[in-house]
Length: 217
Image 1: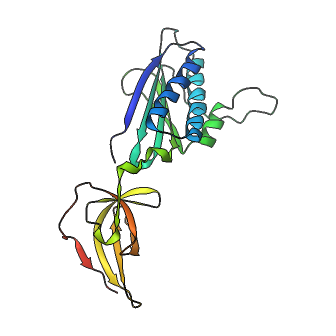
Image 2: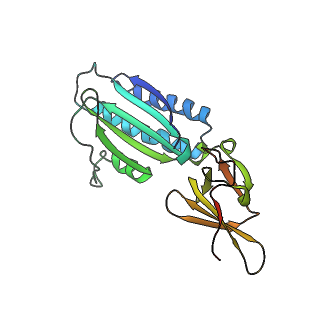
Image 3: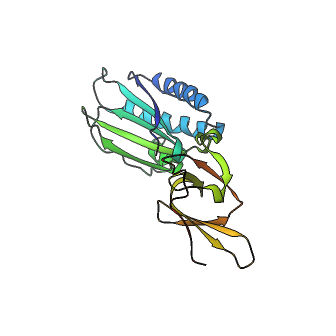
């Protein structure tokens, strides 16, 4: 997995920090080419996280830290908000007549994954949320080649995710033609017509046919 690209900033403990965080996120996501739908979800989630951090009972001179990161290989946007408060963020299910308390309930509904952790340096905690953002996986990050040309060590995009090819084999079909069998790093295998295109990246590519073998029919 590639290293995430990231942006970090700090916000004072005042209400104006919520729209400020949204504006900064919008600018960052526009630079990254994130689509409107994913950007709107990200703004909503970040608003809830920053709002919760501002409600924590700590001295006013304590800042709220925000980290925005993109994990391109996974097509994931990661948002982190850190505060100096103790306690554990918990999802509440408020009564119908309650006007608040639905922030984390909304975050949980929108998130691909979320959680919290104690800050490694300093006091307080970090609440993080990962959101699916398919636009982060750019077309320029890969090229299309015929399945027969795939080599061991390359990264191939299958089932919406990037996987490393561990071995490449071929099978002769009884009806004629050739099937390519790719063994992947997660233990799965892909069988595909030799002429079908696959999107690949080079990552420790073996340029020789080493690792290719004829698979049993």
